[in-house]
Amino acid sequence: MMKVIIQKFGGTSVGARDQRERAARKVLEAQANGYSPVVVVSAMGRMGEPYATDTLLGLMKSVGDDADPREQDLLMSCGEIISAVIMTQTLKAMGCPAVGLTGGQAGIITDESFGNTRILEVHPGRVVDCLGKGQVVVVAGFQGISKNGEVTTLGRGGSDTTAAALGVALDAEAVEIYTDVEGVMTADPKMVPEAKPLKIVSYSEIVEMAHLGAKVVHPRAVEIAMEGGIPIRIRNTFSDAPGTLVCDSSMVSDKTIIQSDRVARGVAHLMNITQVRLDLRADVNESGILSQVFRALADARISVDLISVLPTTICFTISDSVVDEAICVFESLGLKQEEIRITPGCAKVSVVGAGMRGVPGVMAKVVETLADAGVSIYQTSDSHASISCLVMKEDVLKALRGLHTAFGLGV
Ligand code: ADP
Ligand code: ASP
Ligand code: MG
Figure 1 (spheres, protein in one colour):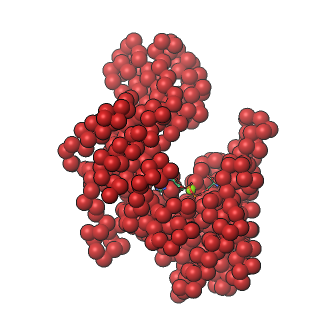
Figure 2 (tube, rainbow, N blue to C red; figure 1 turned 120 degrees about the vertical axis):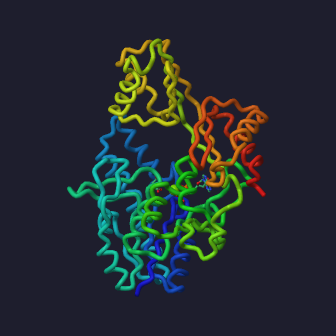
């Protein structure tokens, strides 16, 4: 029986030759430990580097603003294909038989919602054949093919999703996500230097953290692995640290280790948010405007968050990038300028942890901490495992650091 392991390497792990060699050594180590590795790669490097996803998007924009989503996906998919070829050649140069496959060749079948498609099925026959021949299979992440043969992409950060879907389809022992930090940490270490790596966390807490902005792993990837019962390990390509194990209590013998005694496991943030506040003259239910607003936004494919509705006020957030479209929607509904209040330049900071459920005083601690840090709160929301506050983007650092300390996350 083959013991399959998925090893996904992000853009910063495959950008330069020495990085690719470090990544390839992780693959050789897995082989030496008796695993058949399937490698998933992201496009090489970050913005500005020639084959990075943002560079390809910039190339598309240079032609004009109305990019065709189909053509844009075809272009973006090239970044991961280039990366898969170069990684395959790196492995071969190190004496390891390897073969590169596009997402489509690896059997990733998607719908046709270009730019943010979902995986419908995985047909991993070709991957299994190659593994059977002793080859390491290097799959281009972030992409698939529709039943009509169209090339699609899975949304930003989507190579993680490719890795998780292949992990489930191949019944892998684990999905390893290799990146440039020591695992999932109590905060983004670029914002909070004293952030600590978490040893073990439940799928549901990571899904919550990822949705709230911890972009170290894509939330969809965690959901797929959770449904398939495959553990994820998030690790640093450039160290031997064990990283973070993401699993549930049925997968570990000591059930207590996955349940933290802490109220919070981490803080997360999301930037580039605009608050919309519609202060209306009539009752939102009686006038019918409530359903008209949300239907019109849905038809314009504008997604909304942090929604709160009061008798004459509708409040929610949208991405900074769709403000102009949203204003057109409100005007088309006949709303007056004085009824529409738009506040760009906001950010959402969140405290996350399954342990906060039913514990009194968590909200008190959040608001007291932000008040002490001089941070104003413009809106809040909460779930069973998180409390989020909308703040101005220039206050994010102060807010994250204050909350990280107040909830004892750095110790
Ligand atoms: P990759 O290219 O490997 O997919 P990403 O940039 O998508 O890498 O994700 C890794 C980055 O996620 C880190 O460099 C870090 O800045 C950021 N990050 C945000 N929140 C967290 C967190 N809670 N733990 C670890 N990293 C985080
Ligand atoms: N290259 C894609 C992106 O930058 C996918 C990924 O890195 O996971 O979003
Ligand atoms: Mg990523």
